[in-house]
Image (tube, rainbow, N blue to C red; front, side, top):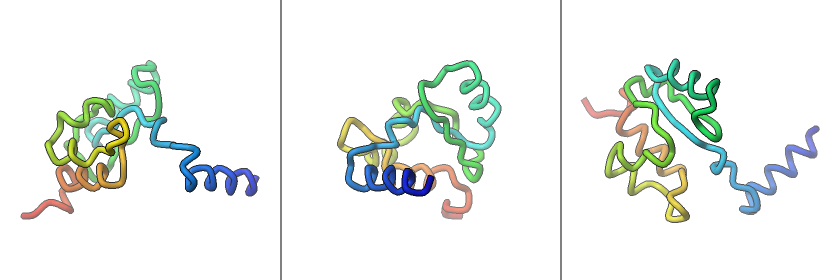
Length: 102
């Protein structure tokens, strides 16, 4: 129901609910099959996100994100290395071919 969605959104906006804690793994389009297998076989204890525009990004757990690039490591939140907007921006800068300089 709509009021449930509004309540959930309010919890997120006030910091009482952190949906990012459900994120377990990320990868690019070439990792799609491996990501689906990981979900089906329960290799990751949460959600797996595939970036279709980041074709060559390897599938990694959230804990492995710092190993991808120094800029990605620096973009992780100070609160227990949380994935944040800055983290996604750093991932896109590294792996999204449309964001990369020629």
